[in-house]
Image (cartoon, rainbow, N blue to C red; front, side, top):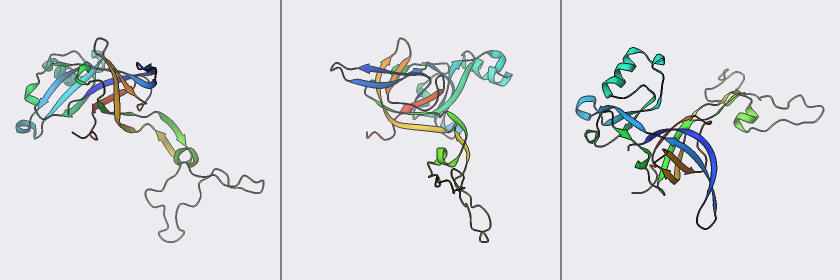
Length: 210
């Protein structure tokens, strides 16, 4: 399923003909450019490699610049592959715009969530705190995480303090409220992962019955 790459602009609200308000996320979706065509005969699978976002040539090495020159496109920042059934129907350097999505369609949006830094178990895992009485010495610290003798170590997978956020997150089945092909803008219902200006990947939802 061919998708799009984009950048999160922010959130706003729109109103329908009945005056009902809907919170939406505004995404600068595309245009993307085909930088490589992969076929099952040559590469073992069918896919399109596409790129998005202008990039300074000084930030790319010679192999990357040569790859873009071969495709006939300018230096671009983000490169992603999308599996497709008919890669032969596309051309190198072809521009793909936001109008591949339609209003009312459902899509899956993938991005990197906001980083929250190092967090304790209460904020990170929503665990309960200890008693807050004067005699208590146990308020927000982690409790016992393993047995003493057997196995005598912390078993993998135990929850504890650590880095929170900055993870790859996919929000499924978001409705496309509006498509602005002239300005390459996509308005989707609800929130999407990541901060403003964060990169996003969008594709038709896998949970919608055909």
